[in-house]
Image (tube, rainbow, N blue to C red):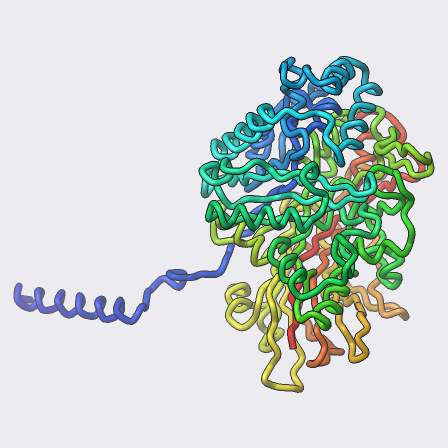
Length: 621
């Protein structure tokens, strides 16, 4: 028989053992104290509600910031065409980014706000709002054309609107379930249409953001003045904020230049400034894709995707080929390497995200659930053939509704779904873009990856242990003959299409100071082999004869690879990012054709190949 003394001794020894384990930090749980992110969160950092003047003038009367947050959280709402609309799955986060210029003016104008109606322009716009669609669209263009100089001064209305936006953001922010980030859009368009827009995103709640009013293009069209404002905000409130450039494809050569806004060569101070305030850029959205252009990447068969290259944002000036290099992410990153060689800092070492820029209050960019850029282009029989941007100088510069890209979303790797978690992931660039599909992508760079790592159930843990994730910097190896390896894994949207391939895009600066690029196929579905040109041929298509259905009988649900750069030079600065391509699927315009029994214009594509772009990993010698 065991005595009570023996029992007490045994328990004492057990307690001492546990204390000893605790003292050295050991735990049975392998996840205790784990610091790296295991979750990907989905959201839209660029959505407009009825508080944006152009959105409201174009018909968005009812879907305010509150409705936008409700919809993003998964609730059904009633659109202006009377239809119920809902996401297939809720989003995890949202930024309602209404234009700072005339912020919240339209709802108050509709309500007869005497401060606004007392102005001549306010009275005239009030009358135009009562007109037909064409009259309201004329008003939209008047609003947009006045963004360089305000036509209405209504400071009280602006304060009311900003406080209302901040209240909605705080009310719908629910850490762990849904993150509502406060923000707005700074809408700079020098020369009447060259897009330099930024979305401003805050990490903070209304206790800090209410201390300011949004800095707008009425204050300055110079991005450097915006950064000064953001600097003052952080200094005065102790908060955190960033700016996200978007629609670089419509900037007519201004977004990613080798000079500052005044035309001076970029120096080290400017490069540091821009790198801090703009850690990510929006590479894809409804108004086209800004990854690369076929003229910039002629050997890239996937370069011509969602290409808008006719004019600037308003169709007021034709696009010239020389402008393209300063408009696309890949060429900007290559330019950044050159600027780094000269200044010591790369101002274009940004991460990449997607977002919608929808003005409907609805972050709905799935091809079979696309709710349009503006309310007038919610699902209706005419939208596939109507003009979207009607140029005021040349009809050849018109952009049509069928050219809109049902895109995109931002994917964020974070430990938690909170303002801090989402914002900090954007800041460190551990983010990626998709054109609407929720493809899960992991990407790491390092010097120790092996093919056997692909079979590990803890692939991400291995990636963080011996490498750096997307958005990170890879330092040089102690072995001067080593080449970096990259561990990449991609999984299809669980309610979407299979994957065609994974590609790694490399950009580097050679010994002559010239910027180069190369696209490598690193994983692909099926038994395909490279053709004579070294490229992997297409898979074909599983889209059915009805044009709106397909099967996952081709492609793969999961692709992964460990790839080593075969042409690595330890002396050359370089970047590497991943592009994941889906199999062909029906495009939104085909769903319009089927639902409304209409025919899209002949030039409208019937299918699309959705994709993801990761933030780059930057090799620093």
